Amino acid sequence: MKTKIFFGCVMALLFTQSLYALTGREIMEKTDALPEPQTAFMNIIMTIYKGDRVEEKEFTFQAKQYPNDEDKALISFIRPTQITLLTHSYKNKEDDQWLKLSSGKIKRIASSEKGQPFVNSHFYYEDLSPVDIDEYKYELLGEEKAVGEDCYKVEGVKQSGEKVYDKVIFYVRKSDYFVVRIDFFKDGAFHKFLENYDVKEIDGILTPYRVKMELADGKGKTELALKDLKYNAPIADTTFNKESMR
Image: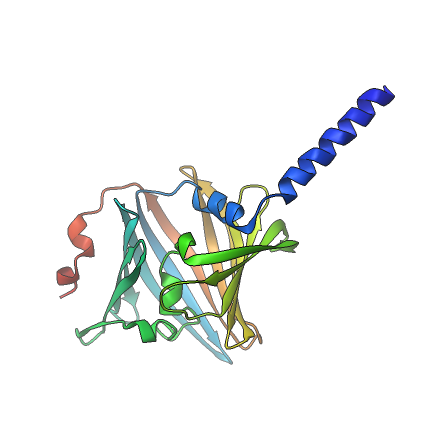
């Protein structure tokens, strides 16, 4: 019996060491490898809190994956305005974004504008593009709880492209490698954080039904609530053409 107990302890120690041997890059690769839908359609309520002012907006989100790690997404506001944002994301290349204003005017979002707020919220245009893990250098800082979950704490510093943030810290849930929180650092200071709540598995896809982006000083936040969701339903390619915004 003592031999079995000793052997079990050794195996547990070896297993624990193998977990700690994971690098920050390896952890983020596991996150990147989580199942994703080929297409997505969502209806989302956005609530913006700034001081005593609360503003509610509603929009649809459509996205589609293409070969060569190219993604396309369209955000279309239903109320109170008719603003539309089209994003084309590429591998090893700066993303393209176009904004259609309520007036009908279409403008391209320049790289220098990626750090500006989107529709007066606490999300920036940069936050609306998917993360290309190859653009970052990673370091595992340790382990920490976030949103009540045991997580790996991984620092990411962008190495190429437009740099809106000095660094970001990902809190990756140990149970399934899903990111439940991101800390954003800007101008040398902790700037804001994003947290994912009510994460459910829908058609094999881990999906947060509530998302919060909050300023580090607690003086403002934007919450997203998922109202409706469809994965892998057909979406026409023309939906994501710039010409279709006119």
